[in-house]
Length: 305
Ligand code: AMP
Ligand code: FES
Ligand code: ZN
Ligand code: ZN
Image (cartoon, rainbow, N blue to C red; front, side, top):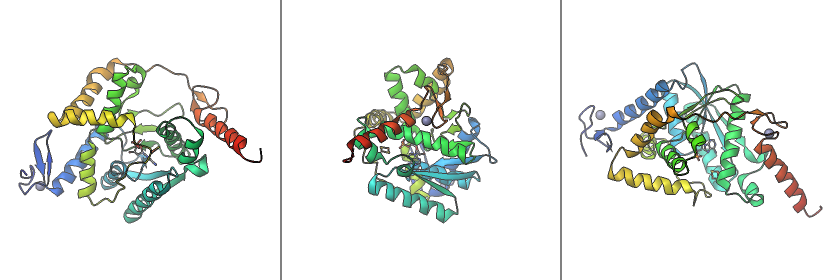
């Protein structure tokens, strides 16, 4: 291991794409600076903003909450309990402990109480859980942030997530999704501002921050994640990264710099869902339609009907 780039002591972390090593203290400092620079570069929020960090209990979102807290931002947490057995239980406990030890406020929203748990919906829907789960999370994160007066919703999406999504959108030439792929989505039309302050940091870099910073997090993946197409894209990109360090970051940053400015998102007309009032393209939003399907299926399958 090389010596720390900053102080010359023995390095504990080596970052191949920059060809530099850091000791523990200077790695944590480098990471924080990187997040702070990203927040400023994209005008994500200021120290006066009320930020809601969506935390899953994993390394990325807890590292994000930790670094925002250390940098002096006003950030509370939101954990959505998806009701996926022990996995959700463990994740909630980890988030609660994280908040308690730092004196931070954590909100917990139970999906089971709001609509139904993921395993309950899975029994009635034919789609893979990840598709409706993502939709539900986005809906409740946005709605919760608005109701509680947060102007910013921050998620822990990292460079691996974002470059894999970019890769899949490019393979499908999904122009509309490409146009909307950006680390900041502005507020308006029923949405709060959504930001991804970790998009320049890889999964490994976040794991190192969590490990060296003494953050306890849930390592196991959601039991329904197996077979998700994003895993394959991540594998391909990681192989390229290994052969040529820095590929993922270059791929993503060059997209933002060169291609994104040429793309224009199709203007979709949004209105308020006639049932819940949330933004939607149709008369009734997809979540309220899911709710209707769930109640009709539950009724038709109940023994008394
Ligand atoms: P994922 O879609 O699981 O890759 O997660 C992406 C981001 O969504 C995470 O970094 C979190 O910020 C947020 N997130 C995922 N799961 C939850 C959850 N159960 N509760 C709150 N936020 C979540
Ligand atoms: Fe949503 Fe796994 S986290 S289905
Ligand atoms: Zn050092
Ligand atoms: Zn609705």
